[in-house]
Image (cartoon, rainbow, N blue to C red; front, side, top):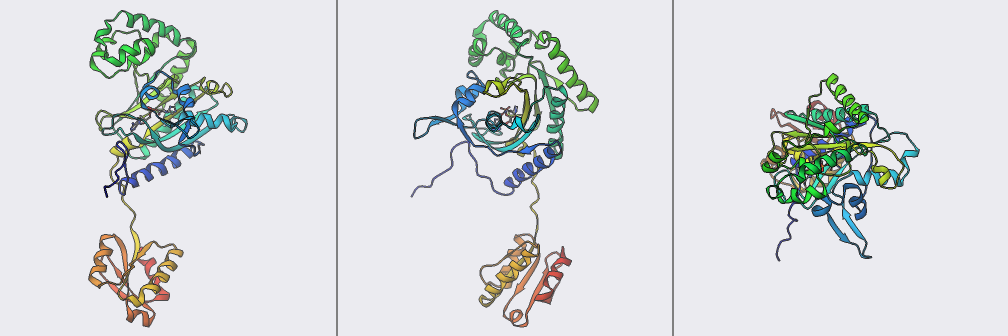
Length: 416
Ligand code: HAM
């Protein structure tokens, strides 16, 4: 029979790689709860329309990257390519805004995008995601930056840079749009990459952050969005930056930072690592005032970010796996059942450990205990069984002694 293999761009994670994901999730819970975030668990599949209406029809994600399929009743469904749209759908559907004027929601899990797989870019990848709904205060933007920065620091990461920009609002963005379109019209479109030739008419802002060197050079003299911000957006952005300055959070104002999703307004940001090659953006986010309303909810502002866990994992050293307290080595089949009872009793008392399911020679059992990296090996053979004893062997020093089974808890406790 031929083997069935996993799908391209998807991965199986075993320890120690999976330990990194547990660490990233636990740290996220710990850090984000300090800011009052609550965890939500949402569906991986949503109606396709949710994503086309929020992320934007003209984006690469919606145009080329979604896993979309009809269900058995021919309704178009999509594996979520990101979490924001689903969080907002759930926020609106469950009327979360009626309970609390400001909701801070954290979620993490797999996302799906049909991209060309490479290092740091998967078709199933994972995000740690935070959304803050119900405030347009620039202080909330700064707090969001503190949140993501503290998270990355708590993971022990450095050599990261924060790029930030303001994309303006529905009042001033169209003015910039017009100026940018006029500039792009004046370029020789033959010189733009294929994507930018299309974007120049469908989504001109995206031409600004194209990574193709030739496009970069062509837009070097493009109008600057900061020159088109309305006074309210200007003041909002200046306030965000002044809080970051005062807190000493380092950032670069990147006028070309646009982001690949259409819902952003005002503050947008990305956190980039120099240590992982081409797919360098480890986190991205920003404000999306207007999106809740656009999805049929009340007119509430919002903002958020997501960190790419595969990319963070590339930056994390192996997380040490925790050592087991004991390995209970059974020297004779007559002791197998008793060993299970003793081990279960020890676990009930808070110790961690494993039992050998077969009786083997002392040598091979000790080899197994060494391989499993346990603190103490317990040896149980017919002689110990008869005397109600067990041999306790300290794997670090090699010292061993026979103790009564009643004293085992105490003996193990001393080994910790
Ligand atoms: P995004 O920039 O599309 O934003 O994705 C956020 C992060 O997810 C990226 O910085 C990257 O680390 C990771 N990522 C994206 N695509 C892949 C991939 N194919 N393979 C591995 N990692 C990937 C969003 O998704 C927004 N929903 C963020 C947000 C939340 N904005 C507001 N709230």
